[in-house]
Length: 212
Length: 393
Image (cartoon, rainbow over all chains, first blue to last red; front, top):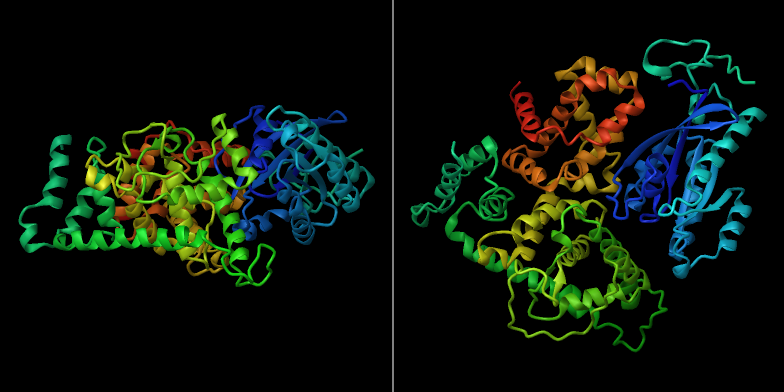
């Protein structure tokens, strides 16, 4: 299937905050209450539309435990967007955000768009982190913010799509160098001047970047 | 070979009468028959005993078994006593208090341990969700209420109470119960109202292991490796073995971990000689030798690096890729090979080659999904057979 752009995302955050469930809800539209532990990475892909353009999202869902951090770090490079997730019912997952953010900033390219996500917002009665605290953290660090529920699907589409919108806007503004694959963006086969027949645009990266 | 004959051949080998005299069992023959067709699933004792031998827990000298088992099981009880029961009576010193920041403070250690406990607790609740076994209760108790001390500590935190609600739709807090010290109730007599869940036993083993190996601690995924071992040992058809499934699992897990320690060591990740990275390199090497075209396509052209999929395969010894009964069979073959972790790589290589047609025509995303969600339509006997031909080539 042809697409205008391909964006790479990474999902990060403490173990058990619901990273894999967010991905599953976004790609498969289902919720799996007891999900296997993520060891290493899991991969998901989905097509979305932004301003009438087909965008393919490639999403890397990572293991949350500290012991896997050195593996996780290798995925930051080459990501255009990151979903940084905490669990609104567990204060410590919010407290660890600074470490995650430092890690992300240090190992990614500077223009990576980061979306802060307070997940499990369906569990209002067990809430430990107020919405305002999430908003304040996001404001302070220049992130987009949203509360989601992978269980009810609330805001899940929006979280992934708004991140893509922001990346798209940055491309229009010329902030992203779309010819540098390390930025996590590829031009799709339909836009690429060197439109090769095989391997569905995997190496096809032209110089034109003929977007609008 | 008919299955009854197969069962008999295992029994002959392990329980041969003359072993009482000559004592050493023929380990190479045992490896051979186990590597040929695995342990029979119909007999619930064979796999349990064979794994104990192959993992080096049971000595090959049959007349050493009793002593060895007695010692090891006793030692495990002592670990429980020292590391869980004694340890929970803290805060007796007048100078120590919960806000003490001294690294030697008992309270500080206590809180650090509670963090490990909560992590283990969360993970073991997610163990093999597709089978009910780990969510079942066993009625067996130790000769003290040690498990309650541990679960009491877990339950001190609001989080773990919440997790129970999530998984079982109910809240349960059990603390300070007093049990009859001599009471023994069979672990297979499941689902009484009393007693602990199987996953709680797994949690206790992991906690003891983490405390005894502080340099390594608890790493996610250890739960998935301990799971099948505990499952096999606690379903042993012989009561005298089943009774000690916890201690026996601890020792076999410890022995297995000593062989794969580097995979779980975060500092060894980048160590190219022994860690996970070198094992993944070796997998690519085997694949390129077996099927250069396929290897080049996925690894070089599509850029599907082995750590995108084989990281989990190798770290968890394939336990997350297949349903539990298949995992047990795969582990029969793996354990019976003397270079078992090299055979694991051959199994991995075989899994890739079996998907050849799809991988040669699929794009990056399709191939990634295929490798991360290995199709359950493929019989593991094919995977094993192909791995064996790689072994001999």
